[in-house]
Image (cartoon, rainbow, N blue to C red; front, side):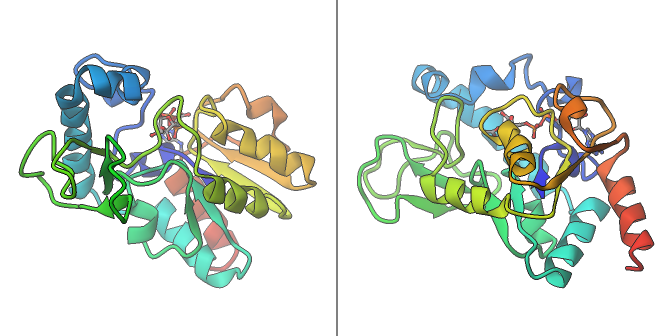
Length: 229
Ligand code: OAD
C-alpha cells in the first residue's frame, strides 16, 4: 500500500496541490525546502503551525479505518505513507512506514548532535514560533523530509521490501514527488498487480494495471464490504 494526501482529504486535511492546499498563495515547493527555511524560518514555521493545528482538529476517516483493519487482518500488510499527519497511526494501523517522516517531530536545524536527533512534540499551538532546540537553544526545524533532502536509508529499505508483494494499492497521491512516485513502478517491476485509487487521473494512471476513479473513503469502504468486513 502506498498512500498520499488524498487519503486524509475527507478528514479535512488540505491536500498539497489543490486550491485549498495553498497557504497565503505559496506553493508547497516554495516552503518545504531548506533554502526557504534558512531565508525565513518564521514563515516556514507559520505554515507548519497552521497545518499542525488543522490536523490536530481532524479525525481519521473511513479510508484510514479500512486500512487499519487490513493491517490487523493481513500479516504481510505494509503501508508506506507520504503523509506526515499521523492519521494512519491514530486509526490504529500496524506496519506504517513514514516515507516523509512526521509533522509531530522536530529536529535541530544546526544538527547540534544532541541525542535523540529528532524528538516528538505534538503541542498545539506551539508556545514559540519558531521553536527552539531544547538541547542547544538554536532553531528547531520540522522533522519532515523536504524537497532536495534524502529519504532516510532505513525507511527506503523498508519501503522497497514492502514492494515484493502480490498487490500494490496506491491511494490518493498525485504521483509527482519522487522518489515516492516511483514506488508503484518498482512494485510492478517486481511482479505486483498495481491498482490506483484517485478521483482524478494522474500522469501515472496509464501505467497501473487497474485505475479506480473514486474517493479513497468510498472505494476502500466498498472493497471492504465486498470482502465481507
Ligand atoms: P497531492 O496534494 O500532490 O495530491 C493529492 C492527490 O489526492 C490528488 O491526486 C487528488 O486527486 C487526490 N485526492 C483528493 N481527494 C481524494 C480522495 N478523497 N480520495 C483519494 N484521492 C483524493 O499530495 P501527495 O501526492 O501526497 O511532501 O503529495 C506528495 C508530497 O508532496 C507530500 O508527501 C508532500 C508534498 O510536498 C512532503 O511533505 C515532503
